[in-house]
Image: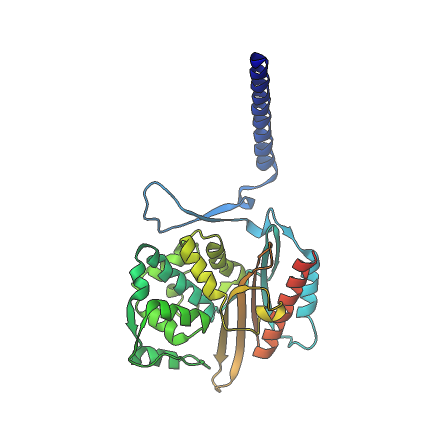
Length: 334
């Protein structure tokens, strides 16, 4: 009986092995014959890798939606929202949405001025260093007059709650920078981080470096989701630091964009950015408003980044909230 059972097991394993080889050959053949190399998913790995034998993987990027199912019905709904007559014709809207294997992109590669969206990168840079040296978060940094003068140059800046001459812990400054979008906290952190630390984050993700853009840096909705993905997947920071970062983003005090389109019971980890361009007559020429985040719909969290450009902040915030509502309704009723 035992010998018969052994023979049966060996036979099953042999068949399984042969079938596996056949499937492997079939898959390779299908890839070789029907998919070009440019269409295959490519790995995004850390570029500034201090290790000698490993190459840390951040995530796989599938180009132009390859292997993903585009939500055409949602695309029609959103395009109808954008085309509504009560919105100025000169508005520009860019959207990138990911929910598992479902995705949607509308002008997703068009680039905008990120403004406060890049505060997330400053946070990531500090938390990455804190992974190996937690004491960094307790270091004290003084809010100086030089930093205050830099803030005063930002058009329509909301000001800062920092007190001139007072010192603050790095962790406190990160909290203020993300939750309140405090520019004083952001500039204080940026002015006190070693050269190249923030640049490493962009380099690792294969993105252009703002330091080389001479003050004219732009980024697309699709590209910005890279930062959200490495936090959600916990592939760049430790699990503890990734959780901490998303917890702060879930406390962001901006309720006129993504959050306005979904029920209060749904948690959203997001960051908004606002940019105002003034012309020679000191009047507003162009306004940009963006909101990008992770919406924690039960058991099906999704990522949504909306970037807009126009003449009115209220119009732009309405567009973002209406699109957010449309996406939420589709996720709720697929």
